[in-house]
Image (cartoon, rainbow over all chains, first blue to last red; front, side, top):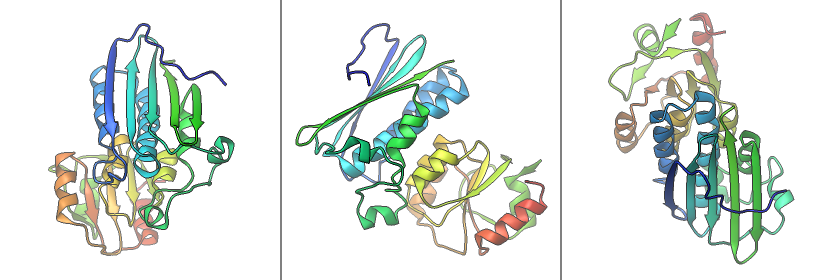
Length: 149
Length: 111
């Protein structure tokens, strides 16, 4: 897997959102705003859909699992890059976390329909390139690339 | 072609939100796990869910669903209805359960 790094070249537009831990009332808002911008730019519907799924799952993960973090989108001539960074707690076993159906979400969160263990697998599925790095006690960084073709 | 309007006009569905119901329904889906819906949901879907918190609005908006159907007479908070209006998402309420909703949608031509 590639190393996580922010590729600042050829960025036509940048979007950045702060996502707070446990903020269920606003969860999904950042993704909705991102989708609106992509729509205004007349980006292909399939690409928008994949980017929407990627940003939504990332946003929900930040709300449910992280201490809070950021969701950033770089719109480029040939792709959309999505960067997700949080302030912890970090993932001990990434392979396990990437397994469909595995979740550490609480019962209360599951009752709301979250925590199906599909977030990370969905994010990987819709991305042309998916990079995840995590350190326990430090945080998790994810980069997702959705290409236009 | 069936629209949300047809459902409300001809069957036991009540509009909770949105100005116009002029959306075509092409698919039907029922699931309460949001990530599952995100993975499987298609464009112009009538989505049946018992979840009534505001995240269903995000899912419906992101996947461009035709409408969200809250079955079995489950109550929806006015706060959620207001948010649905703001986001122009069609919420419907019905006393029917998922099976009977699917039956109606099937008979109405969604196969």
